[in-house]
Image 1 (cartoon, protein in one colour):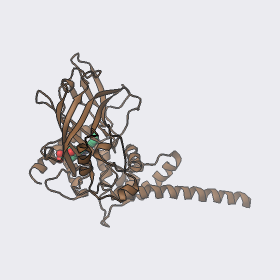
Image 2 (cartoon, rainbow, N blue to C red; image 1 turned 120 degrees about the vertical axis):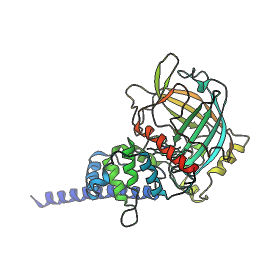
Image 3 (cartoon, rainbow, N blue to C red; image 1 turned 180 degrees about the vertical axis):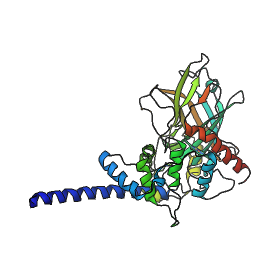
Amino acid sequence: MNKNKKDNLVQKFQTNRMLLLAKIKVVLTLSTLITSLGMTSYSVNADTSQETTMKVRNTMAKMASKEDTTPPENVTAADFIEIFEKLSGAYPGFRKAHAKGVCAAGKFLPNQNAAYFNDSELLSDESFPVTIRYSLGGGNPNADERVPGVRGTGIQITLPSGAKHNFTGNSAPVFAGKDPETFFGLLKTFLPDASGKPDPRKTGAYIMVNPSTRANARWSQTTPAPVSFANTPYFGLHTFFYTNYANEQLKFRWELQPNLGNKGLSKEQAASMSSEFLADKLKEQVSNPETEVSFTLIANIGKDEDTNIDPSQQWPSDREKVTLGKVVIDSVGSESCNPINFDPNVMSKGFSPSDDPVLRMRSPAYGISFGKRMTNQ
Ligand code: HEM
C-alpha cells in the first residue's frame, strides 16, 4: 500500500472514530440529563441515524451487561409502586407517580353533534361538572417546575346518571415503551448502582437496545417546560373503543388541545423564575376576565392498520379528528381532586379500553397508590 493511500485510510478511520465518539458523548450527555430529571418525564433520549446508531448501540451495549439492557419479565403493579418509591423517595400520603399537582374545577361542554359519538351519555347534555388535577410527572411532591418533562392532567366528568368518565393523559404524545416491561426496564436504569449514583451509560445502552423508548426520548429532548398547565396539550396515548347503540364500534385516541396555545419557557425565562409557579400561574389565568382557560377535547379516529396495543407508536397525523367538546376551567386550588383516583379505565357507557398492556397495568397500579395515599402510607 502506498503512503498516500495508507494516510487516507488512517484519516478516514480517525474521522469515523471521532464521529462515533461524538455520538456516544451526545447519548451519554442526554442520559445524564434524563437521569438528573429522575423519572420526572418517564422519558429518555434518542438517536436515529442508521449505521452510526448501530455502531453506537453495539459499543454501548457492550459497556452495559445484557441484564441492564433486557426488559424484565412479568412485571406487576406492585413492582411499579416499589420502583417509583425507590426512585423518588417515599412520601407517605402522596401519589406514587405525579405526586406534585393542583386541583381545579370547571365544566365539560359537549359537542352534541359530534360524528360517531353523538348518541353517548358523555355528549348527552349542554354541560357537565368536571373535577381536574394538573400534575408534574414523577414521585417527588417537591419537584422543580422549571425543569422540562411530563405534565399530566386527570379529568373526571360526572354525568346525569351519576356515571363518571375519566380522561387521564400526559403532555408527551408518545409513551416510553411498548409495554410495561420495557418501561420498567428503563426505570431500572435510573436506580443508583454500587457507587450510589445512577450510571447514565446504562440508560443510554438501554435506549439503544430498546427502540420503543426512543420517540418519547426525542420529545423529551426537544420540549421545554410549559409556561402553564393551561399552555400544553395532553394526550390519552392509548387506544380506546366506542360502541354506539347500533353496535358499531370504532377506535380512537383522545387529546386535549389548549385554547390558550402551546407555550414553552425559554431557558432565560426558566432561570428567572421560582421553582414553584404553576398553580399561581393557573390561578392568575383563570381569574383574568379577558381570557377563558379551556381545552378542546378531540378524538382521533383510527384505521385498521393503526396499532391498538402499543402506546409508544403514534398514529399518522392525518387521521380524522372529531371534536367531542370543550373543557373550561373555572376555579383552581381546592382540595376536591384529592380523594379521586383518576383511573383511565373508568369510562361511561359505550366506551371500553383496548388490550394495550400499559393501559391494563394502570388500574392496579393506581389502585395500590390510591389505597396507600388514603391511608397515609
Ligand atoms: C405502566 C404504566 C404506568 C404506571 C405504572 C403508572 C402509574 C401511576 C400511578 C401509581 C399514579 C398515581 C395514582 C394515584 O395515586 O391516584 C399515576 C398517576 C398518573 N399517571 Fe400514570 N402510570 C402509567 C402510565 C401512564 C400513562 C401512559 C399516562 C398518560 C397517558 C399516565 C398519566 C398519569 C397521570 C396524568 C397521573 C396523575 C393523575 C392524578 O392527578 O391523580 N400514566 N400513574
